Image: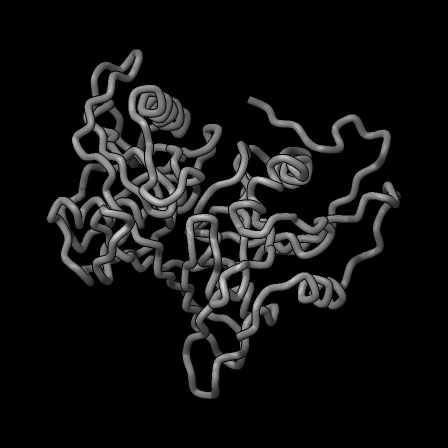
Length: 365
């Protein structure tokens, strides 16, 4: 198996055609990136310029980057090079023998444990940039094993002529319902019943109608304020525990839904607000995973029943289904398959100048 290594990083950097750079600090390497989006949600993949991320495991590397290289996250995600809803990925070696590559996910607040839209994009990227072997002649899909902080996720990439094409699907880590019908007191909005589910990250899930909003037509600002209030209330009143890792034991955000959890061939619409009020433009891959696990747990969905999930932000659609039962610690779980389409949007090289007081970025609220 071809696996990600520092030597492969250097080899990939050597084939990246960099444009002539403007005046910049010669001691600060330019950050070369490929930009993609999945259902409208951006992904900035670092090709070159990131120092080696220390640590024997992927979770250790995540901690190392937070402690020692966080200025690079801010530089790539924040203005003036990004924006408060930018999302990123740094590729790193994995300690897992079956992984083709490891990945650290970046957002406006820090480092997430899972990102489904990024996995869908990285599947295409890994095929097109030669990080995995080309599929055998006649094969329609290439498999890409991506080690995320939450665990190993398998992506399946449609290929033609050795290049990616069409949608990508992935099989999640074990996903489960952590708490159902949890009563939470949301300041200014009263007592509310929510569910907590895990799809590689933990989400509070609640119908927007319970909060007097229509997720399909309400102003984004109203949805963001409401979802953020729910997130803060759940964090204050309920302890999140992952059965296998303390590093994964945190609430990532809130998903406001249209309340259509019972199986239907019609799409169900949602919006996910995560990290520091960051809005997912896609239906949210790990959120779809969590919602499927929740619906299966409640007996609203059977194995291999495919549901469509629509983003209220862009109208983009992912599909999801529970493909088999699993366990996570002592909890009953399911493996979820999520499918969506990623697209390339461009490349860039980012530099800094020593006298720039905003060299590491800023955010407006």
